[in-house]
Length: 240
Image (cartoon, rainbow, N blue to C red; front, side):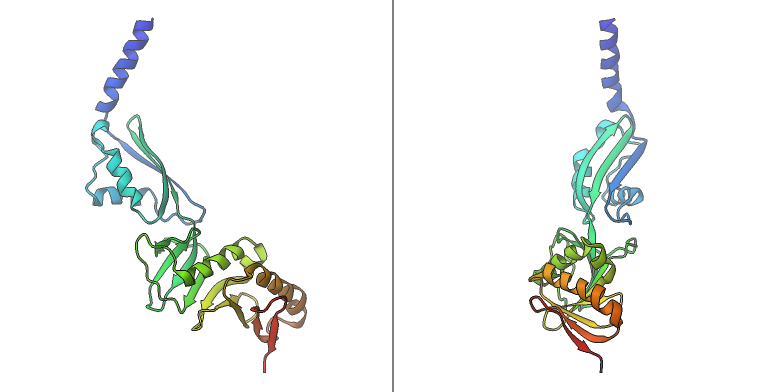
């Protein structure tokens, strides 16, 4: 009986490498609703790089090359595993968590993930991202991270996304010519001067109080400007 089992195992080990790959199965993990790199995209990437998988013997597929190729893709944050299960090639990876949609001064656009990596624009992204525009000079470059100005914007963005009220109220950040942030609110059309990312938690908390306890009674269009740059107060300028 032991000999029979060993024979079956040996036979299986001999036959598996002779099998041909019949399927590529991709699993993409993402915190966004949109999937920027899916099954068809992966198959196209492999084909464009001259990597044959389907129909080839399992032992002839260069998994190291497959992994190295996909690791270069800017949408992928981490590859969890690439291996065969019988005749199926399983590819499992995490996609970058995109949080910002940037429009720069040159008319270009790209995304930024929560770690500060620049991600190329894709029309597949349908998520309601925070928009950043204005005095932004950084262009997209493969493998690049945000510069100093965009790092400050990202710091504020992460705080906005962590709070349901902020996330619903502030969906756009404008960087003015003085490189100071202006928040664009969904309720009201006043300018909100935010400055830089110093004391961002306090500024956002103060704005929440103004919107909930002040503007909700007086009207969201009462003021032309809210200046949150000062400690422990918001300076409001009425409309003329």
